[in-house]
Length: 398
Image (cartoon, rainbow, N blue to C red):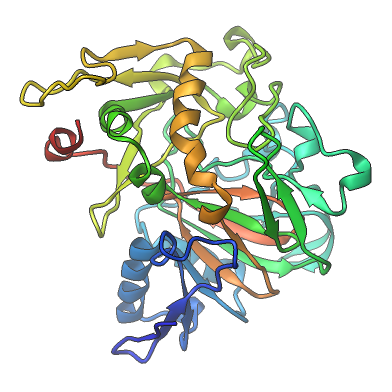
């Protein structure tokens, strides 16, 4: 195990990845940081943390004492112009038709911080008593693990990034998760139930992470050509739109059953506020491209034609470009690209301890709830749109 000692005496070590992991593919994914208090970083220390996060996508701090105010300020430091929780301050509780309505509780004195999880929490950050209800595959997937197997087996609930994906609220750069209570118990087996036989041993109440960088690197050349030219159009009010649909058994998108809420039944929406974002997002420190798509919220794909200087090869997909609006085809394309990225050997299931603080690059990884951890979550609607591939990137991969 390689240990890095930074000039400020901050110690950086690899994450404790499980035996199931491909150590070569995940060699650069995630770091544990020791010797610094993330709630009281000075400017030099923060610059080091920012560079580490964008290089490694996840940072872990153990045994941290962190107030909601400190968590907000730490999150805000990554985008100083940001101010509002990614779904809007004090708005989620009012959106009763949203899939997020029952899973987020706002910290009253710091509305950018949400309490998420399962069970009853007493006297926490100004909340006298809170009953939490965590997202569970049984209420979201088309199929469910039989009740008799429910203690030993589980599933990824929904692979996603934290983002509103509609209106003026832009995808946060960073999400911070601070563990409040961590249920104790034996490991569970995450079942994919997608016909592959894939399973993953995971700690109880894990949060699972997949790398957008690795997902892009795994693509074949023809799919890289599509990804570098593609933009994803998201549904208006996507969390209301998807609430009546049901997810696939591995959490990587929705089943095609025409159960999404009809557009004319959604809350009032404006076509000008629909977000259309690149399929690949550029890392602000490394310049590396990350495959960054919320599979449940995608409604259409816009694929640009090959640039004039590119060489058209046999097998090149959509050389003249395309506007893919058939939802079944949209999901087929995205799933084909993303599914290799959640192979058991490429997923990092975090083994939570109380007072763990995890920072993750929300524009570079997807994550999924699995268990019933209770945690404080903070992410802020960004001040700028994600940067997509450059003209040189497109020419290189097209």
